[in-house]
Length: 185
Image (cartoon, rainbow, N blue to C red; front, side, top):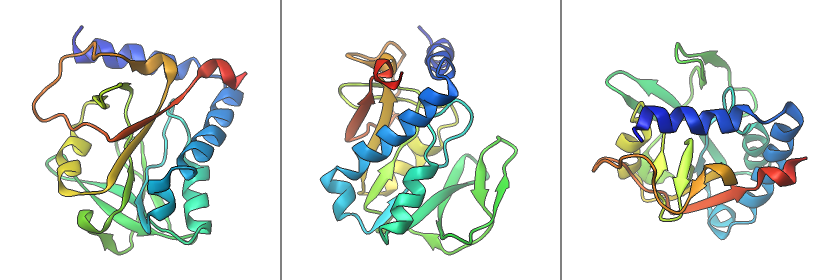
């Protein structure tokens, strides 16, 4: 199966969640992530704002800020690059042409200063293989950091082996937290 078809299939699985299931998944995401030792030890975290069909991450962002962590969110740059910007409760956002919210301004956080990264994606394998959204932004950025790389996915998008072609530039994550969509009802 090629990556385009694999992405479409995994995205449909996310889109099939109701608003109530999505809200419950957000709560489970926060519970699972904040119980991790890597999260608890982290001073600086790189998160994303879940968009569209993705599991929402707003509550995790707020939790991190309340826990006194230095929180950064990505901002897209030319040539499929990205940077992470430190945010706080007063941060202003704009909607990028790709549809995601990005911080308008704030100090940049170097990849080497980040302790924990929540890596977005559509599907994962037990070995840590990741099927991203197709832009390659994280695959270009992740090699710059030594942070613990964690992902959260639905059970239906978590596979024993990749059913998509893997490329040498694909970066694996360190840990995958799985949310069983049957528990969201």
